Figure 1 (cartoon, helix red, strand yellow):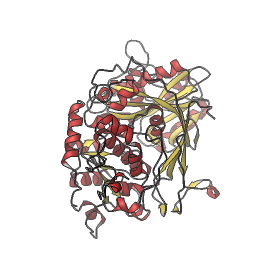
Figure 2 (cartoon, helix red, strand yellow):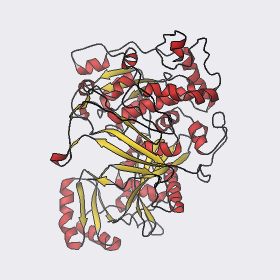
Figure 3 (cartoon, one colour):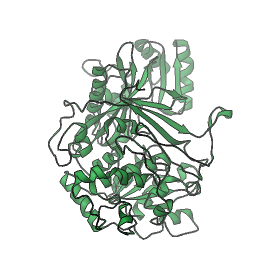
Figure 4 (spheres, one colour):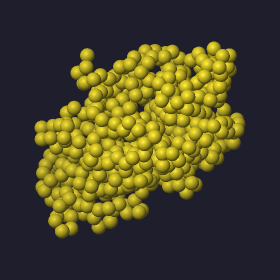
Length: 571
């Protein structure tokens, strides 16, 4: 409206460098107060626009889609899809002012590397949400939503489906069609695109290649920042045996298992420190294994039936069996061996009647680790989360605080960098919690935590990747009640200080494309209309819009709805 009033025809909807007689706000405080409607205009350009207290607080109308389309650029057309993806486009322009603002911000907040161009190595919900969140941060903190440029990877299927993330990016690179091993999970293609397009960093999202240690290894060799943990840490967390031993070393409780004894000196839970190559000492690792059926039977008697026999490299239902007694264990052992040949095997007690609770953690390269509350993700179907909420109300306050502290100890002990999630099993009847895993990535349900804490998690990932210490990140300082959030650089003892009291409860529901006539099997098809009216207490975002679609290789989730209130029982 301001641009229209003075006759300005700038492409940017809300550039703070717009010079006109109507005079933009001069201070950052004034900018924050007046930015809500402007930033919402950008996000409302797509059906992905959502309305969370920590983001906007007002309902806005979409702007014309043609306005954003004019700014898009894409590689030159080539007959071969891979060549097309690697053709060199004219780089999008970034103003000198925004470049200076970014570099000034990084230096001011104790960072060491400005990141000006990011490759989004993902699609769907992950790509959509990441671009929205990081653009929002760039506008509020730097005064320019285009201070960081985003290059998206897009398959022919995503292009045909009119995927929202492609419209939100500054550029897209067409990559080969088909299953994700041809594109979003293909480390070689991601690295080639990152190198060819001269990006500063790669954001992996969730799924696809996000937990493949080969990706950070290859990017690091090229001097490209991986927005996530280092390859050795990611590698060790992918091994169930090693991850449990590291958790025990950080004094994080584990379910009784075959690694609950044998530690040198006290025969207590096995402990080890992470080695530089991403492993733990082999002799300690081997103590947690069961290598034959007799060792398995002895371990089960010590643990107590029922027990779970697991192959460390198993997954998707393979390499895992529940055993009620010794007879079943003897019968199941060779089956697990055959399903995942050569995989180390271990055992743990079956934990029944437990809730699935999570703690959101972020670690930086300076040895800091913060826990940003958590979530209850117990409502699942076929081992897939469908509802998430936070904060967890089932656990006692002091118990959940210790769960957060335990997650921080583990994060620091292994040198974890970036956003991650420590998952626990919690037994309400005994008020006990047990380590399940540390997911080395951002989770789909992270907006629940954003609604509670008002911490922009993708933007926090970006700032950590720029080398900025956690105690210098404004959102984190606000979360800890620091009045000098914008300018302050004072220390925060994350292990002893308490963050601000959480006065909100958030519940989330996933929106998926499924066929109820075929047992809710994921399906594909065209989306004729997405019509969702956000309010200040209920909001949602979507990875597809009108005339879009879900293709056969896409994740079935295409939307996420959220509701908040002062308590879980809010009416």
